[in-house]
Length: 156
Image (tube, rainbow, N blue to C red; front, side, top):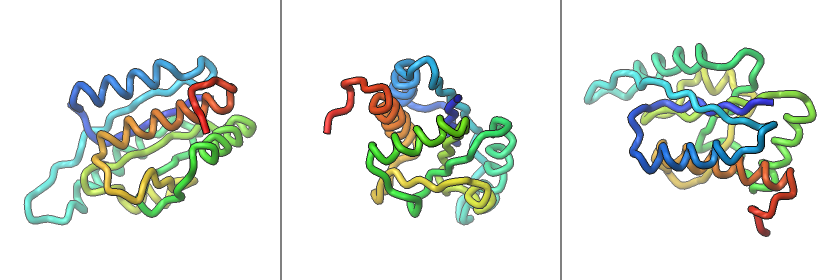
């Protein structure tokens, strides 16, 4: 099983890149995680971002690994505890499914990406910067993997 994080945005602050790299490096060997950065669509002042979302959607869908299950991050997605995320992860492992987590750009995800997603996941009801959502997601996936491996990182 391989884990993928597809995230719109590039040229992240050093602390974001370091956080993502730290948790992806810690992942167990049988659960490697790869980051794919998607160049944002061009935004025009005064527009609602629809054009940018469409361009980003094309790039996201083209970057999806073959056979992966798209898991789109969306504020209206299912809110999980870390243990529930571990259950999702265990289920995917048992079924041989490789999830591809998708974080949209500043204007969110296009409906075409959400409709293609096998699941919608909400990290928080709070509005989060997309860069910070990367670090939070990767840390939570690492924590879920630790639960499955009986590693002491997670404490209830």
